[in-house]
Amino acid sequence: MPLAADYPFLDVLWTMIIFFAFIIWIWLLITVFSDIFRRKDIGGGMKAVWIVFVILLPYLGVLIYLIAEHQGMADRNAAQVQQIKEQQDAYIKSVAGSSATDQIAQAKQLLDSGAISQAEFDSIKAKALA
Image 1 (tube, rainbow, N blue to C red):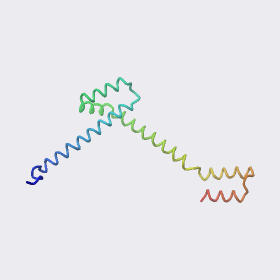
Image 2 (cartoon, rainbow, N blue to C red):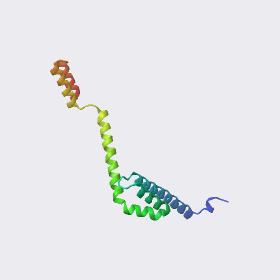
Image 3 (cartoon, rainbow, N blue to C red):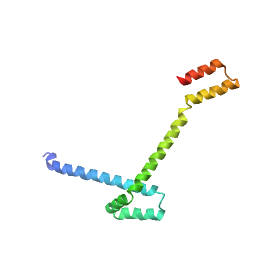
Image 4 (cartoon, one colour):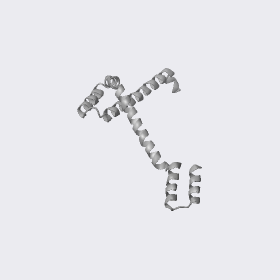
């Protein structure tokens, strides 16, 4: 007896829909819990109330949280993205080294102090501008 005949296509489709809905539900719970825990505008007691509310009434709790706090969630996500971008930019600037202008200015200071000759200054300048 074939196995495929025992499990019709619509049952497979329904199982896939239920599975993906469950995955989306878990993702929403993680999103709500992570937002609750990273909030700095409410205290621990209010965080505990939200957590209990979401656990006791899972569907209603998550939907109410998403409706009530959607703007705050968006603002916190935007602030986190901005902070990560600033950290990334600072890291890139720290490892990228100095710009051509900085290199020429440093070489000019060395030339003025007599540490390097005019020919060395010209070669440093040519390398920086290349």
